[in-house]
Length: 250
Image 1 (spheres, rainbow, N blue to C red):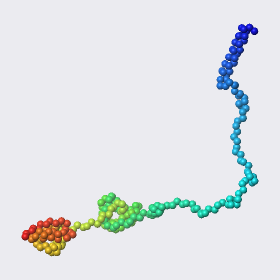
Image 2 (image 1 turned 45 degrees about the vertical axis):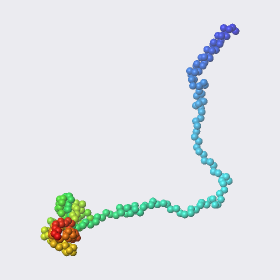
Image 3 (image 1 turned 135 degrees about the vertical axis):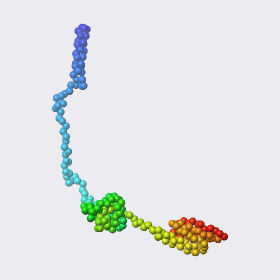
Image 4 (image 1 turned 120 degrees about the vertical axis):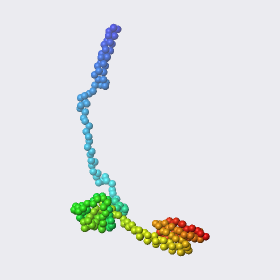
């Protein structure tokens, strides 16, 4: 074969190989071999296997157990189920909360209403209203029944009822003294001071007691006697202030 013929044959072979590799790369780019679709479809799917119970062991395979091991150990003491324990303080509070609330009886005396309220014939809200009183009214209370005050009404000439929360108790006030009573009390204190002068050996001193002040007047011979007159007046409990107007004339 000539040289030209060999070169032509080599060119044809190179061209054929080029076409083969180009076609393979175009149609099967991911792998060098074509996928076998038929074989992939025929592959069996994996199946889940159900757990199988092992066969019971024969008596010959089990280990021997002695009589001491077969008997369960007896507990040393019975354990009772624990109960929730409540403290004594909580128990006392629970008992107190269960007791019904009972108000102490109202003290008899004079009460004063703090708001406008209804006067009823009986101690309940459904009883008939026999009167209405405004704030600041005086009530003559003789006792109580639950949440109600028992009032003796001079206007109605009977016993009526008023809510306890609508009135307040007025403490007993000391009655005001008359002028005669005040003057008699002053005279008694003056007499007590004169008796104290005699015990302290004070002569020539007079006293006028007005209010809570003792006014001393007179003449004494020594300063010590003037001082003793003041101390004698201080021994009387009613004397709170002293005006010492005693002069010393040796």
